[in-house]
Length: 184
Ligand code: IMP
Ligand code: MG
Image 1 (cartoon, rainbow, N blue to C red):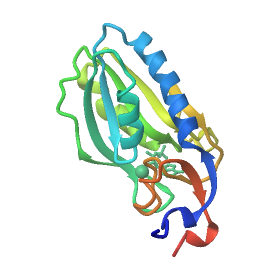
Image 2: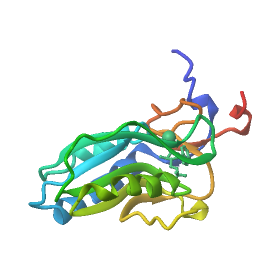
Image 3: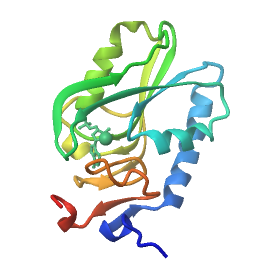
């Protein structure tokens, strides 16, 4: 058997695959009721959101339009830069639409704060925010997710879309890295 390159770097598992799927099923139930008959646009924020987005979509039974924005206020490491970089914008006309921004994690809130400004003048009927993880201890902006799956402490987590230096996104669960992995 090949060595599990990722697993040997993990110190602790925070949220298992099963816990994640259970929470996503609950969130989908809530959204199926909240957006019934509204044909919302689910805007996923790449790259980190992709597993959460895909698993959530498969549990929604309402009509939804799907699109992505590639944006981040991070470059490689663990610290938010406070400046938003948009590599791919949405070309959906948001006028009169119910928009649901889907994030992997809300940390400082800088990305969402800047992204909400970026989308503000497009005439959306409503804009809500859902996130897999909420890390409120480090919030620098007045950003409160409308729905989240899990709260986490002030620790840098990886897996299920979340990266450290572009690695570990393909880990099926969420955990923290061993100290010696940083700066390897
Ligand atoms: P914010 O702008 O500080 O709220 O950060 C949002 C983005 O930073 C997220 O979409 C993630 O891509 C990244 N991020 C924040 N905290 C973590 C973490 O603990 N692990 C991995 N990525 C993180
Ligand atoms: Mg990221």
